[in-house]
Length: 191
Figure 1 (cartoon, rainbow, N blue to C red):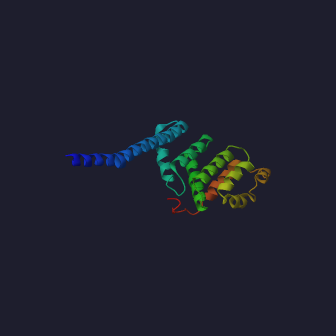
Figure 2: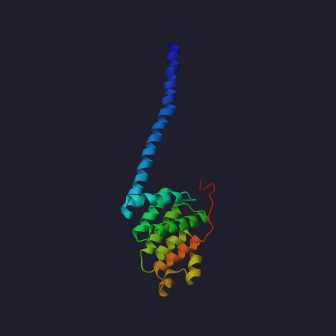
Figure 3: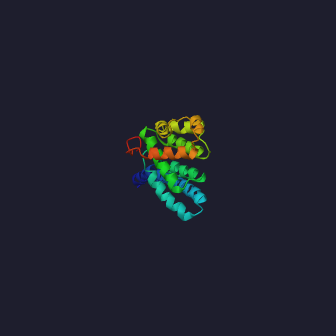
């Protein structure tokens, strides 16, 4: 009986170490993930004013987050920041898709994507393009420079302002130009 008892005790200790503790950790991670998703949805609801619209957008954003180099948090935060400054949900999603693909094209990831969408929000929030905002985008997405040169003959903010090119025109040229890039398929880095 003592031998069987010792074996049962060892079995219980093993189960606690290799099953119970990992399950507890998994439960904690699940609760945190649920809280993070709930926070993202709440942010969308605050912007849209409708829980139903926020849920519909969130479904679309989850699909965008599957693209190489993107994540749900970055995509949702990007959409919120763009909608706050006046982008429609559709324009924000088109911009996110174009920027995400462009970042992945040059081997970038979430950090570059976040910087680029921040720069886009800053750029779109001014009347005329500022060098600082353009440089943030060009640093994260080098393809922007040739797009601007093709569209306006220059990629310098001071020259664009002298020509009377508005920030809205620059934003449209960047988003439309990047939207024409071939889609990047996932690789080992995206996985």
